[in-house]
Length: 432
Image (cartoon, rainbow, N blue to C red; front, side):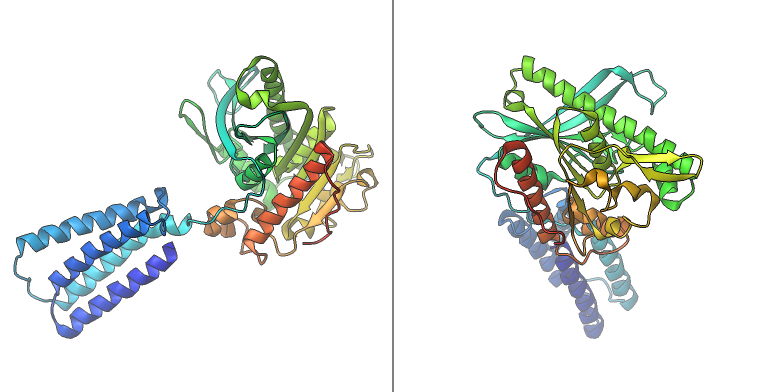
Protein backbone atom coordinates (compact mmCIF):
# COMPACT_ATOMS: atom_id res chain seq x y z
CA UNK A 1 0.00 0.00 0.00
CA UNK A 2 2.84 2.39 0.84
CA UNK A 3 4.54 1.88 -2.52
CA UNK A 4 1.21 2.23 -4.36
CA UNK A 5 0.49 5.53 -2.63
CA UNK A 6 4.01 6.73 -3.38
CA UNK A 7 3.55 6.00 -7.09
CA UNK A 8 0.19 7.80 -7.15
CA UNK A 9 1.62 10.81 -5.30
CA UNK A 10 4.67 11.03 -7.56
CA UNK A 11 2.50 10.87 -10.67
CA UNK A 12 0.22 13.58 -9.32
CA UNK A 13 3.01 15.95 -8.22
CA UNK A 14 4.89 15.62 -11.51
CA UNK A 15 1.72 15.88 -13.63
CA UNK A 16 0.44 18.91 -11.72
CA UNK A 17 3.80 20.70 -11.97
CA UNK A 18 3.83 19.97 -15.73
CA UNK A 19 0.26 21.30 -16.02
CA UNK A 20 1.24 24.53 -14.23
CA UNK A 21 4.29 24.97 -16.46
CA UNK A 22 2.32 24.38 -19.67
CA UNK A 23 -0.48 26.78 -18.67
CA UNK A 24 1.96 29.21 -17.01
CA UNK A 25 -0.30 29.54 -13.96
CA UNK A 26 0.05 28.61 -10.28
CA UNK A 27 -3.44 27.02 -9.98
CA UNK A 28 -3.33 27.60 -6.24
CA UNK A 29 -7.06 27.03 -5.65
CA UNK A 30 -7.04 23.73 -7.53
CA UNK A 31 -4.03 22.57 -5.53
CA UNK A 32 -5.71 23.57 -2.24
CA UNK A 33 -8.84 21.61 -3.08
CA UNK A 34 -6.73 18.61 -4.01
CA UNK A 35 -4.80 18.81 -0.70
CA UNK A 36 -8.09 18.80 1.23
CA UNK A 37 -9.43 15.95 -0.90
CA UNK A 38 -6.22 13.95 -0.31
CA UNK A 39 -6.64 14.24 3.46
CA UNK A 40 -10.32 13.22 3.27
CA UNK A 41 -9.40 10.25 1.06
CA UNK A 42 -6.69 9.21 3.54
CA UNK A 43 -9.21 9.33 6.42
CA UNK A 44 -11.76 7.30 4.43
CA UNK A 45 -9.16 4.68 3.48
CA UNK A 46 -8.12 4.42 7.13
CA UNK A 47 -11.67 4.18 8.50
CA UNK A 48 -12.53 1.53 5.91
CA UNK A 49 -9.37 -0.43 6.89
CA UNK A 50 -7.92 -0.27 3.39
CA UNK A 51 -5.10 1.45 5.24
CA UNK A 52 -4.55 -0.39 8.53
CA UNK A 53 -3.63 2.35 10.97
CA UNK A 54 -0.30 1.93 12.71
CA UNK A 55 2.80 3.94 13.57
CA UNK A 56 3.94 3.48 9.97
CA UNK A 57 1.21 5.85 8.78
CA UNK A 58 1.56 8.57 11.45
CA UNK A 59 3.93 10.84 9.54
CA UNK A 60 1.91 10.70 6.32
CA UNK A 61 -1.35 11.28 8.17
CA UNK A 62 0.13 14.26 9.99
CA UNK A 63 1.52 15.69 6.75
CA UNK A 64 -1.84 15.34 4.97
CA UNK A 65 -3.54 17.02 7.95
CA UNK A 66 -1.15 19.98 7.96
CA UNK A 67 -1.44 20.40 4.18
CA UNK A 68 -5.25 20.27 4.43
CA UNK A 69 -5.28 22.91 7.20
CA UNK A 70 -2.92 25.14 5.21
CA UNK A 71 -5.08 24.71 2.10
CA UNK A 72 -8.27 25.52 4.03
CA UNK A 73 -6.75 28.70 5.49
CA UNK A 74 -5.53 29.70 2.04
CA UNK A 75 -8.99 29.25 0.53
CA UNK A 76 -10.63 31.24 3.34
CA UNK A 77 -8.16 34.12 2.99
CA UNK A 78 -8.66 33.99 -0.79
CA UNK A 79 -5.63 36.07 -1.66
CA UNK A 80 -4.71 36.68 -5.25
CA UNK A 81 -2.30 34.30 -6.88
CA UNK A 82 1.32 35.32 -6.74
CA UNK A 83 3.13 35.93 -9.99
CA UNK A 84 3.87 32.71 -11.84
CA UNK A 85 7.49 31.52 -11.93
CA UNK A 86 8.53 28.24 -13.52
CA UNK A 87 11.52 27.86 -11.20
CA UNK A 88 9.28 28.24 -8.16
CA UNK A 89 6.86 25.60 -9.43
CA UNK A 90 9.69 23.14 -10.06
CA UNK A 91 11.33 23.85 -6.70
CA UNK A 92 8.08 23.47 -4.73
CA UNK A 93 7.32 20.18 -6.51
CA UNK A 94 10.77 18.78 -5.71
CA UNK A 95 10.48 19.77 -2.05
CA UNK A 96 6.97 18.28 -1.77
CA UNK A 97 8.11 15.01 -3.38
CA UNK A 98 11.03 14.75 -0.94
CA UNK A 99 8.78 15.47 2.05
CA UNK A 100 6.16 12.95 0.91
CA UNK A 101 8.80 10.25 0.32
CA UNK A 102 10.13 10.86 3.83
CA UNK A 103 6.61 10.69 5.31
CA UNK A 104 5.88 7.46 3.42
CA UNK A 105 9.20 5.80 4.26
CA UNK A 106 7.93 4.02 7.41
CA UNK A 107 4.96 2.56 5.51
CA UNK A 108 7.31 1.33 2.78
CA UNK A 109 9.94 -0.13 5.11
CA UNK A 110 7.30 -1.61 7.44
CA UNK A 111 4.31 -2.28 5.16
CA UNK A 112 0.96 -3.54 6.29
CA UNK A 113 0.51 -7.25 5.64
CA UNK A 114 -1.99 -10.00 6.24
CA UNK A 115 -1.17 -12.33 9.09
CA UNK A 116 -0.37 -15.98 8.28
CA UNK A 117 -3.32 -18.28 8.81
CA UNK A 118 -4.15 -19.51 12.31
CA UNK A 119 -5.80 -22.93 12.20
CA UNK A 120 -6.35 -23.91 15.84
CA UNK A 121 -9.56 -23.90 17.84
CA UNK A 122 -8.33 -21.62 20.63
CA UNK A 123 -8.25 -17.87 20.61
CA UNK A 124 -4.82 -16.69 21.65
CA UNK A 125 -3.97 -14.35 24.52
CA UNK A 126 -0.59 -12.74 25.20
CA UNK A 127 1.29 -11.41 28.20
CA UNK A 128 4.76 -10.01 28.88
CA UNK A 129 6.92 -10.16 32.00
CA UNK A 130 10.39 -9.21 33.19
CA UNK A 131 12.22 -11.84 35.24
CA UNK A 132 15.32 -11.00 37.29
CA UNK A 133 17.90 -13.68 37.99
CA UNK A 134 19.24 -13.06 41.51
CA UNK A 135 21.96 -15.65 40.94
CA UNK A 136 23.65 -13.83 38.03
CA UNK A 137 25.17 -10.40 37.66
CA UNK A 138 24.84 -8.56 34.36
CA UNK A 139 28.07 -8.82 32.39
CA UNK A 140 27.23 -6.18 29.76
CA UNK A 141 27.09 -3.16 32.06
CA UNK A 142 29.39 -1.54 34.58
CA UNK A 143 26.48 -1.11 36.97
CA UNK A 144 26.01 -3.59 39.77
CA UNK A 145 22.77 -5.22 38.67
CA UNK A 146 21.37 -8.70 38.30
CA UNK A 147 20.73 -10.26 34.92
CA UNK A 148 17.17 -9.78 33.69
CA UNK A 149 15.25 -11.25 30.77
CA UNK A 150 12.01 -10.10 29.18
CA UNK A 151 9.60 -12.80 28.09
CA UNK A 152 6.40 -12.91 26.06
CA UNK A 153 3.69 -15.55 26.47
CA UNK A 154 1.24 -16.78 23.84
CA UNK A 155 -1.36 -19.13 25.29
CA UNK A 156 -4.92 -20.44 24.79
CA UNK A 157 -7.43 -17.86 25.95
CA UNK A 158 -10.04 -19.34 28.32
CA UNK A 159 -8.36 -22.72 28.03
CA UNK A 160 -9.44 -25.63 30.17
CA UNK A 161 -6.81 -28.12 31.18
CA UNK A 162 -3.05 -28.08 30.86
CA UNK A 163 -0.87 -27.68 27.79
CA UNK A 164 2.77 -28.37 26.87
CA UNK A 165 5.26 -25.58 27.42
CA UNK A 166 7.33 -24.42 24.43
CA UNK A 167 10.32 -22.10 24.90
CA UNK A 168 11.70 -20.02 22.01
CA UNK A 169 15.08 -18.32 21.62
CA UNK A 170 15.65 -15.69 18.89
CA UNK A 171 18.70 -15.32 16.68
CA UNK A 172 21.54 -12.81 16.94
CA UNK A 173 20.08 -9.30 16.51
CA UNK A 174 16.62 -10.85 16.83
CA UNK A 175 13.77 -10.05 19.19
CA UNK A 176 11.34 -12.24 21.09
CA UNK A 177 8.58 -11.44 18.56
CA UNK A 178 10.65 -12.67 15.61
CA UNK A 179 8.42 -15.72 14.98
CA UNK A 180 5.17 -14.55 16.54
CA UNK A 181 3.08 -16.15 13.77
CA UNK A 182 4.53 -19.51 14.85
CA UNK A 183 3.77 -18.88 18.52
CA UNK A 184 0.21 -17.86 17.66
CA UNK A 185 -0.39 -20.97 15.55
CA UNK A 186 1.00 -23.22 18.28
CA UNK A 187 -1.00 -21.53 21.05
CA UNK A 188 -4.19 -21.84 18.99
CA UNK A 189 -3.68 -25.61 19.06
CA UNK A 190 -3.18 -25.87 22.81
CA UNK A 191 0.38 -24.87 23.71
CA UNK A 192 1.78 -22.30 26.10
CA UNK A 193 4.62 -20.60 24.24
CA UNK A 194 7.16 -18.37 25.96
CA UNK A 195 9.64 -16.41 23.86
CA UNK A 196 12.74 -14.91 25.45
CA UNK A 197 14.48 -11.63 24.73
CA UNK A 198 18.17 -12.13 25.48
CA UNK A 199 19.17 -8.60 26.58
CA UNK A 200 22.22 -7.21 24.77
CA UNK A 201 21.97 -10.07 22.23
CA UNK A 202 18.55 -8.90 21.04
CA UNK A 203 18.32 -5.85 18.77
CA UNK A 204 16.25 -4.22 21.48
CA UNK A 205 14.10 -5.27 24.40
CA UNK A 206 11.61 -3.38 26.54
CA UNK A 207 11.16 -4.24 30.23
CA UNK A 208 7.93 -4.03 32.18
CA UNK A 209 9.05 -0.67 33.58
CA UNK A 210 9.43 0.71 30.04
CA UNK A 211 13.23 0.72 29.95
CA UNK A 212 14.60 -0.14 26.49
CA UNK A 213 17.89 -2.05 26.24
CA UNK A 214 19.66 -2.06 22.88
CA UNK A 215 22.08 -4.62 21.44
CA UNK A 216 25.56 -4.51 22.94
CA UNK A 217 28.12 -3.01 20.55
CA UNK A 218 30.88 -5.43 21.60
CA UNK A 219 28.65 -8.43 20.92
CA UNK A 220 27.64 -6.98 17.57
CA UNK A 221 31.29 -6.51 16.57
CA UNK A 222 32.19 -10.03 17.73
CA UNK A 223 29.37 -11.52 15.69
CA UNK A 224 30.19 -9.48 12.60
CA UNK A 225 33.89 -10.34 12.84
CA UNK A 226 33.08 -14.03 13.21
CA UNK A 227 31.05 -13.92 10.00
CA UNK A 228 33.92 -12.12 8.26
CA UNK A 229 36.35 -14.86 9.30
CA UNK A 230 38.46 -12.55 11.45
CA UNK A 231 38.96 -15.04 14.28
CA UNK A 232 41.05 -18.20 14.47
CA UNK A 233 39.24 -21.48 15.05
CA UNK A 234 40.18 -21.42 18.72
CA UNK A 235 39.01 -17.83 19.18
CA UNK A 236 35.78 -18.65 17.37
CA UNK A 237 35.21 -21.69 19.58
CA UNK A 238 35.73 -19.61 22.75
CA UNK A 239 33.25 -17.01 21.51
CA UNK A 240 30.69 -19.72 20.79
CA UNK A 241 31.08 -21.09 24.31
CA UNK A 242 30.57 -17.61 25.75
CA UNK A 243 27.50 -16.86 23.64
CA UNK A 244 25.91 -20.23 24.30
CA UNK A 245 26.46 -19.99 28.05
CA UNK A 246 24.55 -16.71 28.14
CA UNK A 247 21.75 -18.11 25.99
CA UNK A 248 21.36 -21.43 27.81
CA UNK A 249 21.61 -19.74 31.22
CA UNK A 250 18.75 -17.44 30.18
CA UNK A 251 16.66 -20.35 28.92
CA UNK A 252 17.34 -22.48 31.99
CA UNK A 253 16.45 -19.55 34.23
CA UNK A 254 13.16 -18.90 32.43
CA UNK A 255 12.14 -22.57 32.45
CA UNK A 256 13.01 -22.96 36.14
CA UNK A 257 11.15 -19.74 36.96
CA UNK A 258 8.05 -20.98 35.15
CA UNK A 259 8.22 -24.39 36.84
CA UNK A 260 8.33 -22.61 40.21
CA UNK A 261 5.41 -20.35 39.30
CA UNK A 262 3.30 -23.33 38.25
CA UNK A 263 3.45 -24.46 41.87
CA UNK A 264 2.87 -21.09 43.53
CA UNK A 265 1.38 -18.54 41.12
CA UNK A 266 -2.38 -18.43 40.48
CA UNK A 267 -1.94 -16.61 37.16
CA UNK A 268 -3.97 -18.64 34.59
CA UNK A 269 -0.94 -18.79 32.30
CA UNK A 270 1.01 -20.92 34.73
CA UNK A 271 -1.94 -23.01 35.84
CA UNK A 272 -2.44 -24.14 32.22
CA UNK A 273 1.12 -25.50 31.85
CA UNK A 274 1.86 -29.21 31.80
CA UNK A 275 5.35 -29.33 33.31
CA UNK A 276 5.84 -32.91 32.11
CA UNK A 277 5.77 -31.79 28.47
CA UNK A 278 8.43 -29.24 27.54
CA UNK A 279 9.79 -28.39 24.09
CA UNK A 280 12.37 -25.83 23.02
CA UNK A 281 12.94 -24.19 19.65
CA UNK A 282 14.78 -21.26 18.18
CA UNK A 283 16.12 -19.56 15.10
CA UNK A 284 19.81 -19.25 14.21
CA UNK A 285 21.79 -18.69 17.41
CA UNK A 286 18.59 -19.41 19.32
CA UNK A 287 18.27 -22.72 17.47
CA UNK A 288 21.83 -23.62 18.48
CA UNK A 289 20.98 -22.83 22.12
CA UNK A 290 17.84 -24.96 21.86
CA UNK A 291 19.80 -27.97 20.61
CA UNK A 292 22.24 -27.38 23.47
CA UNK A 293 19.38 -27.30 25.99
CA UNK A 294 18.02 -30.53 24.55
CA UNK A 295 21.23 -32.24 25.59
CA UNK A 296 21.52 -30.36 28.89
CA UNK A 297 18.05 -30.88 30.42
CA UNK A 298 16.30 -34.17 31.07
CA UNK A 299 12.87 -32.48 31.14
CA UNK A 300 13.13 -31.21 27.54
CA UNK A 301 11.28 -33.73 25.37
CA UNK A 302 11.51 -32.19 21.88
CA UNK A 303 13.70 -29.68 20.04
CA UNK A 304 13.23 -27.71 16.82
CA UNK A 305 16.35 -26.21 15.28
CA UNK A 306 15.64 -23.48 12.73
CA UNK A 307 18.67 -22.78 10.53
CA UNK A 308 21.39 -23.15 13.15
CA UNK A 309 24.68 -25.01 13.67
CA UNK A 310 24.93 -27.62 16.42
CA UNK A 311 27.25 -25.62 18.66
CA UNK A 312 26.70 -28.04 21.54
CA UNK A 313 28.07 -30.88 19.38
CA UNK A 314 31.14 -28.95 18.26
CA UNK A 315 34.53 -30.01 19.64
CA UNK A 316 37.69 -27.99 19.02
CA UNK A 317 40.70 -30.17 18.29
CA UNK A 318 43.63 -27.99 19.29
CA UNK A 319 46.27 -30.37 17.94
CA UNK A 320 44.84 -30.15 14.41
CA UNK A 321 43.28 -26.70 14.83
CA UNK A 322 39.93 -27.84 13.51
CA UNK A 323 36.36 -28.62 14.57
CA UNK A 324 35.04 -32.15 14.94
CA UNK A 325 31.61 -33.47 15.86
CA UNK A 326 30.93 -34.87 19.31
CA UNK A 327 30.84 -38.65 19.53
CA UNK A 328 28.00 -38.67 22.07
CA UNK A 329 24.54 -39.78 20.92
CA UNK A 330 21.88 -37.08 20.84
CA UNK A 331 18.76 -38.74 22.23
CA UNK A 332 16.22 -35.90 22.42
CA UNK A 333 13.80 -35.88 19.44
CA UNK A 334 15.04 -33.21 17.03
CA UNK A 335 13.62 -31.52 13.94
CA UNK A 336 15.91 -29.41 11.74
CA UNK A 337 14.59 -26.80 9.30
CA UNK A 338 17.14 -25.33 6.90
CA UNK A 339 17.09 -22.51 4.36
CA UNK A 340 19.33 -22.41 1.28
CA UNK A 341 21.73 -20.17 3.21
CA UNK A 342 22.54 -22.92 5.71
CA UNK A 343 21.83 -25.96 3.56
CA UNK A 344 24.69 -25.19 1.22
CA UNK A 345 27.08 -24.90 4.19
CA UNK A 346 26.37 -28.27 5.80
CA UNK A 347 29.20 -30.05 4.00
CA UNK A 348 31.62 -27.17 3.58
CA UNK A 349 31.65 -24.87 6.63
CA UNK A 350 33.61 -26.10 9.68
CA UNK A 351 31.11 -24.95 12.33
CA UNK A 352 28.44 -27.12 10.65
CA UNK A 353 30.50 -30.31 10.89
CA UNK A 354 28.08 -31.81 13.44
CA UNK A 355 25.07 -30.91 11.26
CA UNK A 356 26.16 -33.15 8.41
CA UNK A 357 23.37 -35.47 7.36
CA UNK A 358 25.62 -38.52 7.77
CA UNK A 359 26.33 -37.76 11.46
CA UNK A 360 25.62 -41.09 13.19
CA UNK A 361 24.78 -39.36 16.49
CA UNK A 362 21.67 -37.83 14.88
CA UNK A 363 20.26 -40.80 12.99
CA UNK A 364 16.80 -40.27 14.46
CA UNK A 365 16.60 -36.56 13.69
CA UNK A 366 14.17 -35.17 11.11
CA UNK A 367 15.59 -32.73 8.57
CA UNK A 368 13.79 -30.51 6.08
CA UNK A 369 15.15 -28.05 3.51
CA UNK A 370 13.07 -25.10 2.30
CA UNK A 371 14.37 -24.65 -1.23
CA UNK A 372 14.54 -21.01 -2.29
CA UNK A 373 14.36 -19.74 1.30
CA UNK A 374 16.95 -17.46 2.82
CA UNK A 375 17.94 -17.25 6.47
CA UNK A 376 15.31 -14.66 7.47
CA UNK A 377 12.58 -16.33 5.39
CA UNK A 378 12.14 -18.56 8.44
CA UNK A 379 11.15 -15.58 10.61
CA UNK A 380 8.31 -13.06 10.43
CA UNK A 381 10.71 -10.26 9.45
CA UNK A 382 10.11 -11.16 5.80
CA UNK A 383 6.47 -10.11 6.38
CA UNK A 384 7.10 -7.27 8.82
CA UNK A 385 9.78 -5.60 6.70
CA UNK A 386 10.72 -7.22 3.38
CA UNK A 387 13.18 -4.42 2.61
CA UNK A 388 15.00 -4.85 5.91
CA UNK A 389 15.01 -8.66 5.61
CA UNK A 390 16.38 -8.57 2.05
CA UNK A 391 19.07 -6.10 3.07
CA UNK A 392 20.21 -8.13 6.07
CA UNK A 393 20.26 -11.46 4.24
CA UNK A 394 21.81 -10.16 1.04
CA UNK A 395 18.93 -10.53 -1.38
CA UNK A 396 15.35 -11.62 -1.91
CA UNK A 397 14.30 -15.21 -1.37
CA UNK A 398 12.68 -16.97 -4.31
CA UNK A 399 10.27 -19.00 -2.17
CA UNK A 400 6.79 -17.55 -1.61
CA UNK A 401 6.82 -15.77 1.75
CA UNK A 402 3.45 -17.01 3.00
CA UNK A 403 3.99 -20.55 1.77
CA UNK A 404 7.33 -20.67 3.58
CA UNK A 405 6.08 -19.34 6.92
CA UNK A 406 2.80 -21.23 6.95
CA UNK A 407 4.46 -24.51 5.98
CA UNK A 408 7.15 -23.96 8.60
CA UNK A 409 4.47 -23.32 11.23
CA UNK A 410 2.53 -26.40 10.15
CA UNK A 411 5.57 -28.66 10.35
CA UNK A 412 6.64 -27.35 13.77
CA UNK A 413 3.10 -27.89 15.05
CA UNK A 414 2.96 -31.45 13.71
CA UNK A 415 6.37 -32.26 15.22
CA UNK A 416 5.43 -31.02 18.69
CA UNK A 417 1.99 -32.67 18.42
CA UNK A 418 3.67 -35.99 17.68
CA UNK A 419 6.44 -35.76 20.26
CA UNK A 420 4.64 -34.00 23.13
CA UNK A 421 1.00 -34.98 22.66
CA UNK A 422 1.29 -38.29 20.84
CA UNK A 423 -0.97 -37.03 18.06
CA UNK A 424 -0.72 -38.41 14.52
CA UNK A 425 2.52 -39.20 12.72
CA UNK A 426 5.43 -37.06 11.66
CA UNK A 427 7.11 -37.73 8.37
CA UNK A 428 8.17 -34.45 6.73
CA UNK A 429 9.40 -34.27 3.15
CA UNK A 430 13.10 -33.70 2.66
CA UNK A 431 12.46 -30.64 0.53
CA UNK A 432 9.65 -28.06 0.39
